[in-house]
Image 1: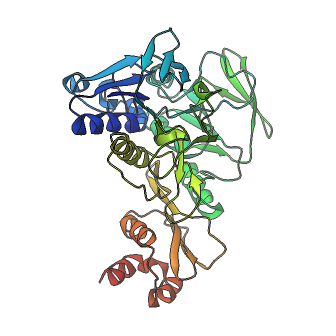
Image 2 (image 1 turned 135 degrees about the vertical axis):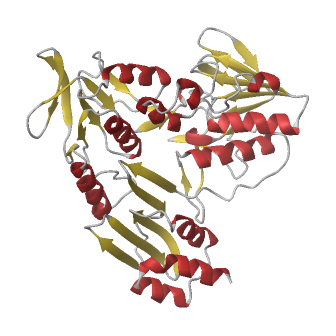
Amino acid sequence: MKYVIIGAGPAGVVAAETLRKNDLSADITMISGEGPYPHSRMAIPYFLTGRIEESGTWLRKNEDHFENLGITIVDGCVSHVDTAPRKVTLDEGQVLEYDKLLIASGASPLRPPVPGLDRPGVYHCWTLEDSRNIVQRAAPGSDVVLMGAGFIGCIILEAMLERGVNLTVIEAEDRMVPRMMNQTAGDMIKKWCLKKGVTVLTSTRATSVDEAGGKLSVSVDKGDAVAADLVVVATGVKSNTGFLEDTGIKMEEGILIDDNFCSSDSNIYAAGDCAKGREYGSDSWVMHAIQPTATEHGRQAALNMIGVPVTYQGSLSMNVLDTAGLISASFGKWDGVGGDHAESIDQDNFRYLRLEFDDDHLVGALSLGRTDRIGCIRGLIQRAKPLGVWKARLMANPNLVAEAFVGLSQ
């Protein structure tokens, strides 16, 4: 059996290992567009800070790991997939045949329509090559502009602060981390960053990147231009699915998959950031671009590919973020479903908790400034058990989530 995996991120790597574990004679090829050593994008900020070497970003630390497993890694980019003859063609013309194909191609950064983003000194923080360029320019005391204050942007923010730069953050939305935090939590994160010496411009759009006085100059729609030695762009991502044009595979932002990770083509599966699958506890199909989801996708997709039927129960939206030392987390339907909610706010100590209910079920939550209840909140949502008397108690004091979790576990 010939298995080909497009992508060498967490989903692709775990899938390849799972295939080998369950099929010792299989021919397994994994296509990586970023060199021979699959790495974790989540580790790149640690490379930026200097805490780890480049090899510290590798998903598997032994450079012979995949060779020892008999997994072939091909360094290249896919240009097209031909579904009828079951072939994958790379940019340089190499053709790989497959019996089963897993698309775990991940996502790529979105480039906003801002003139001047092609200038030297402007980078995304997505690849190791990006990181090498950023490290060269992000010297202590240098002026850095970060475009975007979403999840990825805030991770980069922390790395830049550790490098001792003068940092300005430009965010088009009215709060920080808008796709993960509500107005209250987003404003608290902004206040925290301001106390750390970061200039944060929310409800502000960059309009161009120019050069002035030997430096970059970022013009904005509100206020004066910002001088910079380095501009880092972190304004969202999109699925890598361009090579599937004209294949007929059903897509909606990403590749639509069923509960067994199969696409509309019975020989093609998808996993990770490029796959749109079931959301936990609902009938909705979503894309959750988070590493734990990608890893579980890869494992279960591989099992289904080899004929071991595993029904996916859906992914729970869950993000945990460290922004310059302030921990924030969002779970499930954190923005609510029109039901009751309960809040606990301590502005002075940067602590916040909001619970979202659907009848007497906990369906979403936001947390800021604490880490001791994250597992309990996740457990209450995933169990989907009626809260009973605990709903009234949580409405009166949402900080009782740990007690509710224990009480409902008995």
